[in-house]
Image (cartoon, rainbow, N blue to C red; front, side, top):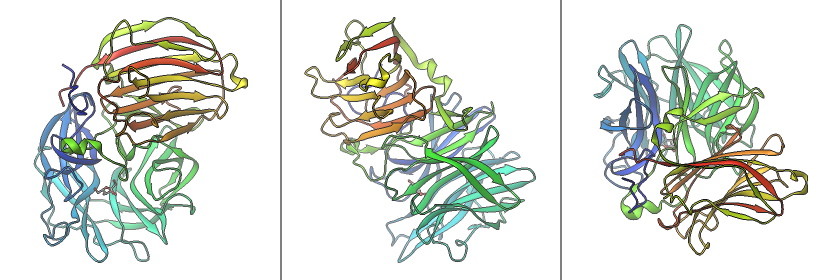
Length: 474
Ligand code: FRU
C-alpha cells in the first residue's frame, strides 16, 4: 500500500520520529548495511544531536535500530547549552570491532569541537572510549570549527580527514594512526582557493578508479554546496591535488553526502536530501529530513564522477508502462498518465533525440502536475544553454521555489533522463549519471500529471518507461 495521506515518503529513508540530517557511519559488515544519521528524537527541529541507526541487507529496505550515540560526556553534553551533541562522522571495522568516529560539539562563546570514538562488538550497542576525546583541539592557527571525521585504511595506517577552515577558507586536515586512538597530525590536505566556501563540512576523501575523489559540503558558497573534486593523493606529503571540480549534485536539496565501499567493492553515496537553510514543510506533521536514494559512484572515461541509482532499487518496481517511439512536434505535449494511473511514487526513464539541437529550444517533463496545470515541476533540457533544469517555481505553495541548473559538459543530440519521484521529492539522473539534481517539492498529493513536452523545437522520444515503486515500509 502506498502512503499518500501525508508527505511521508514511500521509499526514501526517514527517521521514525523527530529531526534527521546528515548520514553518518555508512558501512557494510557481514552483509549488513549500517546507516547512522544525525538525529534529534525529541523534536522535529534540529537540536541535541544523537546518532540514529538503521540496518539493511539491500540498501532499500531499512530496519530502525536503537539510537547508537546520545550526548552524555563533558565533551559533548552540557545542560546549560542548547547546541551540543554527537555531530557527524564515520565508521570502520577494526577486526570484529565496529568503531564510530564523531565530533563532540559544545557551543559556548566559541565553538568547541573535538573528535571522539565509540566501539561495538555487535554493531548495535556502542560504548564511548575512555581515551576520548582522541583529538582535543584543532591544529594551531586553524579555525575551531573542526568537525565530521572521515576515517579509512590505506596500507598499514588509518587516515582521517576533518573539515575546518583557514582564515575563512574551507579546508581539510589529515591525521594518521596505527591504533585508532592515537592520532598524529599530518597537515592541511586541501583548501579552498578563496571561492570554494568558508568552511568545509563533511569531507570525504576516497579512491575511485585510478583517481582520488574529495567531496565536501562547503558553507556560504554562492554557487554550490556539494563540491566534488577529482585528483590525486600523495600520502607521503599528505596532500590531495585536485584536477577538476564540479557539483556532485546540482539540486538545492542535497547536503552532507557521505560514501563508503561496500562488500561488493561498490562506492555508494547517500546524502541528506535537504538543505539546512530552506523551509521544512513536513514540520507541520512533526517530522523533518530524508535521505536520497543510494547511488553508486563510478569514474567516467573523461575523469569525472558519475552517479547511478543502486541496482537494488529495481526490486521496488511494480506496475510498468512502456511507450515506444513518440514524435513530438514543436510546442507539443504528450500525456503519460492517462491509461495506467501512476500516483506520486514512481521511476521514469526516457530518451530524447533532438534533430534541431542547434536551433535552440527545450524538451522535457512536467511532473506532479495538477489537473488545471497550474501546479507542476519541470524537468527539461535547454539546448540554448546546454543545461538540465529542474524548475520548482510552480511546484506548489509549500515548495522551495528554485531553478536548479546542471551544466552538461558535452553537447550532443541525445538526452536521457532517469527520474525518481516520491511524495515530496524529485531526483534526476542525466545521461548515464553525468549530472544529478535532487530537490524536495511539496505539491498537492493529488497533483500527479506526467507529460512529455517540447518548446520551440521538435524532438523524438525514443522510449519512455514508467514503473510505480512500492512502499518499503519505512
Ligand atoms: C552538516 C553539519 C555537520 C555537523 C552536523 C550537525 O549538516 O552541520 O557539519 O556535524 O551537521 O548536526
